[in-house]
Length: 468
Ligand code: 4AD
Ligand code: MG
Image (cartoon, rainbow, N blue to C red; front, side, top):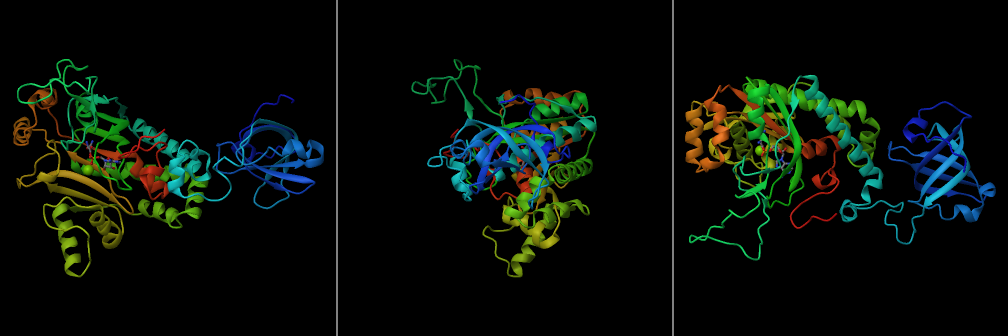
C-alpha cells in the first residue's frame, strides 16, 4: 500500500481539500451497501463523528471486504470528496484498504445494537470504543485541561500531596490501609493492638482521603495552590454518586475568607461548564440527544445568575416547611442532621431552581479543621449543591487559631502524633485561609448528564468491584 501521511478524522471532516489523496486509520463502526458499492463508517477516536469511506466493491473484491465488520481496524488510502449523501460534508473514495485486525462478529460484543450501561460496565475494557464512552472520556480530558488552565491563569501552583499518608484528614475513618505485613501472621501487643514497628513505614499508613492538610502547608507558603489527584475512600456506599477511588481538585488560598472561597468556587465551576460547552459541543450534543434531552439547557442554566448563598439553619427551615406542607422525604429533617442528597436536591431543584451554596453547618457533622463560629454550634463550612448531583463541592474557611484548633482536635480524640506538623501552620505565621474540594467525577456527572458515577471514570472502583 502506498505510504501516505495519516490525517485524523476530526481534521478531515473540516477539510475542503477535495480531490487530494489522504490516508485515514481507524475502527469500523458499521459497513453497509450493495453488490456495487460499500459504505464504511470509520472512527478513530478524535471526534464523535465518523468519516464515510465509499468502496467500489468490484475494484477491491467482495472477498477482500468480507472481514471488514464492526470493530475491525483499517488503514485507508483514497480521495477526499464532497459528500453526496446526507449527514456528512466529506467522504473518502477508497483506492486501497489495509486490514490491520478483524473483529469476529460472532464474539465481538459491541455490535450495532444499543447496550445497557450495566452490560457495558462488565466490558469496561472495550466500552471506550462506543460513541457514548468516547464522548465521556473526551470530555473528561477536556475538563482536566480546563481545571489546570483555570488555576494556572490565576497564579495558583499545582502542588502534589502524598497518596500514602498516616493522617485521616476528614476523620471519617474511611481509609484503605497500606501494609506489607503478613496478614496471615499479624503481631499484636498485650492489649490486642496490631504492632506496626515492622511494617513498611514503621507505623500504620493508609491511602489518602484528601490532600487538604498538606495543601494547607503549601498555601501558607506559596499563597495559592491546588491539588488534583486520586483520592480513596473505603465508604461502603453503593450509590450512583460514590466511588472508592475518585479524583479530587482541592484549591487552598491564604488570606481568603469563606466569602472569597464561595466566589472562587462559583467562578471555577462556571468556568468548567463554559469550557465544556465551548470545547466539547459535539460530544455534549450527542449525549444530550441520546440520553438526556435537558442536558444542554441545564448546563446553560447554571451559568445564568449567581448561586444562592444560604445558611444551613435557613436551609433546614425550608425543608421543615416542605415536610409540613406534605412533601415526603425518605430521611428525617431536623437541625443537626447531615443532609441526604434528596434534601440537597430539593433545595436546588424544587425550591430555588438554582445551585445553592449552603454554609455554617453544625460542627458535629463537619471535620475538625473548620473555622468555629461565635455561636459555638456551627462552623464556616460551605457545600455547593447542584441539580441532579447534590453535593459537588465541600469546603470551608479553616480554623486559624492555634488554641481553638488544638481544643477541637482534643475533643475529637485525634492522636497528636499525627497532627504536630499540621498545627505548626498555626504556631508560626498563621493566617486566615480557605479552600474546598471538587469531586472530579461529580463534575463530570453534571457535564455529561450520565446518571451513574461508574460511567464517567474509565475503571470504576466500588465495593466488591476492582476488575480491569
Ligand atoms: O466533602 P469532602 O469530603 O471534603 C474534603 O475532602 C475536603 N478535604 C475538601 C477541602 O476542603 N479541601 O469531599 C469533597 C468532594 C465532595 O464534595 C464530592 O464532590 C467529592 O469530593 N467526593 C466524592 N466523589 C466520589 N466518590 C466519593 N466517595 C466521594 N467523596 C467525596
Ligand atoms: Mg462533604
